[in-house]
Image (cartoon, rainbow, N blue to C red):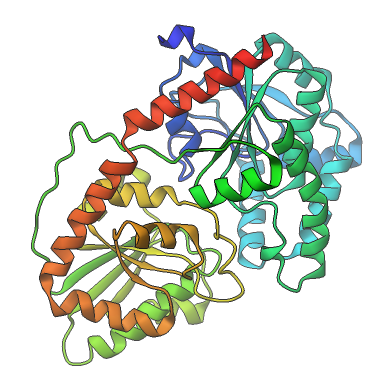
Length: 433
């Protein structure tokens, strides 16, 4: 099937598609598509900047807030590469940074209420959907209610088959802890998730364990879909580790990942007591508190700040070990229980030894263990023990470098991911005919 023969797809997403964003799962999936047969509706102030698509409709959160007060309709078609309203984008960015830094479920409920009062059900939105006239909708399921309401509005008013994509635990109460506001939010979110999942034409999940749970809950027949790796020009390069061993972490440090790195720093305090045997460079845009910053800037660890996306592969290539972290704390260990980070596929492609930390119940940790594709610590006590394993025999680094590379080649070959994605979307589109 050629690009021109592929179904017309309208994606209804949370974030817009930008080539300079750290969030690129959807654009990686759609990079095989004819851009004329693809459009997106999204809910942020950022402007799109991507080679995969040209038609976009924006319903920004800042505009929603203003519409609650002035009661004016919001939402507009925007152009790919158009300059953003920097004031609005910065204000929204600060809001999200603050929200991530100090998670408040009460404020999450307030935010949902603001969206409920916003004037986004407009003629402009309807016209955009009607003019594009998709064959099928692509509907990722998010942990927020307002995107689900937009999705359900379009699905009900402009009926077409649709494909859902679940990449996290957005249904169970496990992530709520003892927070009453979290339970209230999850109670209402579940109603929307159930409606979307039960009535979809096809369902993608990011891990098999999530697929099994989803199928049991909603009667779906899930298709597992992760980011693909193009191995055409990749070869495994055997390399002995440096002295000291160079470890690198690239990515955000949300939902307890910062504390997992703190455990590495604590372990290195003892390991590097007499001489520096291991170093850890941390590249992250996440704003941390002063105490955590201090710990992550000692014992051989160095915080390097944010790094452009196009530099990440180069930084990983220069390392001996790439670090993958999820939470070890009770507070956050279930937040990523069913997820699968695209970082892992990047790590597989790099052909570097993976040192992974995370609770044993988290899906990516289970996956790495099942495939013997990383050196893994599942408790704080194991961190030092597993780091010493890397030092005890340098061949361990070489061995797990190859194991990671081959795991990616075996399970994440891009051509297989492409075939699965296209066949599933095409199959769903035919259910509307």
